[in-house]
Length: 323
Image (cartoon, rainbow, N blue to C red; front, side):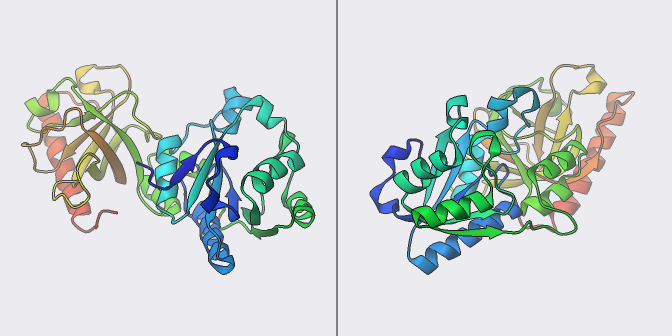
């Protein structure tokens, strides 16, 4: 759960969080590019002796303005908020994005949110930031408004190794099953969060009981295949021995058994058959792609492949400390 101060009405900004330094963005995935901006925000706050506040939106603006082009989010609202809370910011203002809100001019947005609600003394953004009606405001607009309303603007250049770090690039990697490439930009393994529900119980019958995640799992599910990863039991305390466990994760529709319904996320905790995870809220993180989903001619062939998958996952995860 998000433990940073979070609120949704600009008029209800806590007094101890104003004046402040502020940043603005969608922050989907809270990847390394976002974290560079958030680090600069914290630095500005420390320099000025002021709290740091991130401003974001719910739902994603594209989902409101162009729903046919809305991206599948890496980290929908609650996941994004939890990730932002780990960065050290003091406050998170989540604005309801509506068509009426989208009609605000850049100056109306800055005055209502940055000036009146937050008392911003510095605004830290990426140099490609756009805001206001039809994205008509940019960093130059923000600097002009800063001069008018008394706040400094810090604009960061794009960051990345070889190419700009972006949420869309991470989505592309996950759709290709390249979870390692996604992790390199995220700065951590990609994750999904859901509740463990009853499945067909075939894994248990084959000696590999799996935790099946519910259909309302949050987070972008990578392409079908088998992955090495971690399963974290979010309902357990952080210090619990069995909180984060190594797992072999399968995403698919069980083609060997002709179960051609929705894609499911199933995680087998390595070498454990004693766990009862039903109704627990868990996080599954993806470390490395093992193989694509395959159709096997017999249950014996499937079991042999599963044994090889588990061996490989065990080898990979034995050399990694979970995040």
